[in-house]
Figure (cartoon, rainbow, N blue to C red):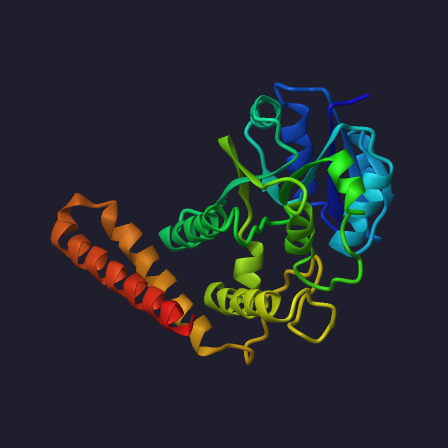
Length: 294
């Protein structure tokens, strides 16, 4: 029996899934199986997964797909990833060693963006900090990096398939009634920023704040019309579907990209310092906006 079952829900992921499968193939720890729960891909996702030696089972929305993968899993631990994560070659080795050493049944880890923009790095740092701070009182974990023992997963009956959004948070909240959430310190993974680019960074933050408020005041989200969510659809927004936050994000990114060009040339030291100050002021203003909303 493998120590770990890696479970990946997919829908038309032929562009990114091979990267994760290659990462898994090159892991220093090899006592694991890979299960791809596919929600009816019309591209080469399933054939690429089979070619890489993964089990392929019918999936659905992320919660459904993860449950379907868990049904056939043989591993002692279930490692849930999404198709767009990137793993260092010793990720499984370090994560599993820490889980064993500290007798962990439920864990998540730090995640960093596949982006050079400091704006993205700041947003991801804030997300990680939120998870760390709320480990005990209000435990949360992203679906693309949840690690749970099979016995605990079965005990809570897996993901609640009636939950339409934030099914990952729902799972973690129910699991922590039996075992605490552990934040892995020994390793981290990277994840794409494609949802940030589709939704808009600040618009997505606003949506997550709405979700969090609903979870805290009304519980799990079971209505499709609460906020718009599209599984595996990362087409850009229509031109007319832009908010103030989208425009603010666009201007900040333009400033940062211009700054990066200037920063490559030491002749423009003075101008670079001005850009640095402007960027910090804008980030502080944005932080104050969201703080005041809370």
